[in-house]
Length: 116
Length: 111
Picture (cartoon, rainbow over the protein chains, first blue to last red):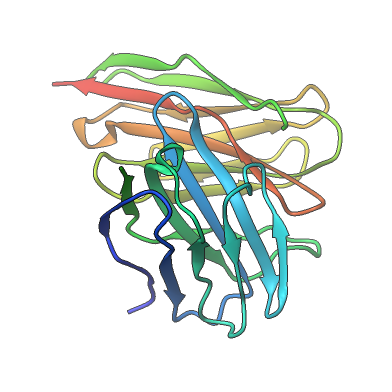
C-alpha cells in the first residue's frame, strides 16, 4: 500500500532533550516536506526536500533540522526542543516538484508532540 | 511569508444545498494552487492541483476554478452531503517550490 508513515505518532518530552521524528514514504517520491499545524495558524511549512541531499527552508525552520540521505526517508530533528514547538507535525511527499507540473502531496498520519 | 487567505473561516450548509468558498493568493510568482480536504483526526487529502489561469477541475460533486491574474480560486460543492463536512485547505506554490497554506474553510453539512 502506498503510504507516508511517521513515528512516533505521539510524544511527550521535556525541554532540551533531543528528539527525532521519522518520516518514510514507499512511493519513490522525490519531494518531501514537513509541516506544523497550530490552532489559528494553519499548516506552516518547516523544511522541504527536492531530492536526496537537497533540502531547503520553509516558512518556520528555526529550531529544526532535517536530512535527506535516502530518497524514502526525511527525518525531522529537534536538537533542543522548547515548549513553543508543541504542535501537530505532518510529513508529506509528492512525486516531484519543479518542472511544468505540480504534483499533489500525500500526507502522513501526523505526530502530536508536547514539550514540557 | 506569503499571504494566502481563505473565506469564510467556517460555514454551515443544509444537506442538499450547494456552496462555495474562496482562496486568495498573491498574483505574482504563481506556480500552482493546491486544494486539500481535511477531516477531523485524519490527514489532509489532495483534491486538486491547478496551474493554469482559467483552469477548472472537477471530482464528483466538488469542483474548483482558478484566476491567477486576480489571485483567487473558488471551490464549489454541489448538493452538499454530511460526508462533505471537513476543513478545505488551499495552498499556494511559488516557483521556488515553497508551499504556503491558507487557514482553511471549515464546512459543516447539516442533515
